[in-house]
Amino acid sequence: MFSNETYVKRRQKLVQNMHSNGILLFLTNKENPINFEHNTYSFRQDSTFLYYFGIKAAGICGVIDLDTDETILFGNEASIDDIVWTGRLETLQEKAIKSGVFKVLPSKELANYFEKAIQQQRSIHYLPPYQGYNKILLTELTQQPLAALQPSVPFIKAVVQQRAIKEEQEIQEIEKALATTVEMHKLAMLVTKPGMKEYEIINVMRHYAEDQGCTFAYPPIVTKHGEILHNLHSHHTVATGDMILNDAGCETEKGYASDLTRTYPVDKTFTSVQRDIYTIVRQAIQSSSSILSPQTKFREVHLHSVTTLMAGLKNLGIVKGNVEDAVQSNAFTLFFQCGTGHMMGLDVHDMEDLGEQYVGYTEDETKDTKTFGWKSLRLAKQLAVGNVLTVEPGLYFIPTLIDMWAAERKLSEFINYDKLAQFKNFGGIRIEDNYVITPDGYRTLGPKLIQSLEEIEDFRSAHLS
Image 1 (cartoon, rainbow, N blue to C red):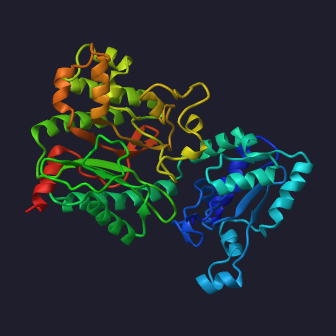
Image 2: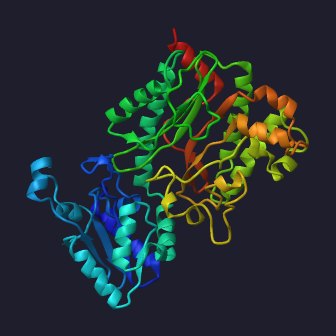
Image 3: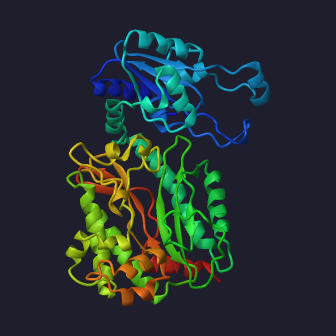
């Protein structure tokens, strides 16, 4: 946990930003069973609760009364049965004090508290629930059916406004995660050789991360099929001529994430074709990240990225015609189907549970939820000092998608399908780094992870016999 002063100040600022009356309800996560009740997945606390309270205990609730500024935690202390199995651990009361909360009530009091609030016709503000247990709990506390639950938009906006601007201590935690992640990626490059399984590379990274007191921030994507955007199948055997796309990040003990991607050859060097495509993607991350600033909308960063990608593909003869027109027609979505980046912090996709419309967009911007490619743009709004985000352009040659477009001759004025056929089984390349927005632009976070063709080839050649 950070200092109790941190959590007190965060809650005070939230109350000031709410401009509303009523009660703020903070739900925590429960331990979820894998196959029976007492065999559970690893527990991960709700990130908003972590931000405002810092407590990792499962199944408790926090309340802030906006009218009296009283903060209460509802939860149960360990019973003798609990102590028999787990030993005597830090009490909830002790955790509450570390969070600057001095009123703790048993969980059984929670229903009575909200029954009284409903009788008094007080507003109950809550965030969108994503665990089934909390959806059921909300129906009980608010006395509404599931279909009638309406998360509080003012509460969502106030949380996003606050969490989007990272404190210096948060940035230090993110860079701590990045320090471990950089070494994870270097180890992956170091051990990869023909004949290995993809999961063997993952296991090397997992071992290192856990030795540093970290866990994976998300299931890593380590694959020779980089054209599959979220390829979690790690059973393939890597071979000469393959590339490995490694999208992996870790999470610190306080819950802060990192998110890096590198693509490297299984051999000591890239092939000439791999070098050509890699160069285009690297140009895209360099050019698009260079315009990061508090004056820039991320939508422009995305457009800058895809324009660079399309210009590079035109140089290879895969794209033809006017590049700007090709971008406007969305021809780039044949090669780049996702957004160029996302917010990052306590979640690797920061605050995604609160809704992309609130996190990545502003009131005067509407997220396109239907257009192929654009519907995956998580971040579009103007950046602000203290935002932490990723930039991660890529080129993905997806055989099924190529066949579909080619059969329709879709946007054939911009796509040279005869030339593209030569790249149909190429795979995919992504490069990703993490950044913080500063008053005069941006800063790349964490220790530098090798990125250029020469750096990667030198590193691979120096360690492969």
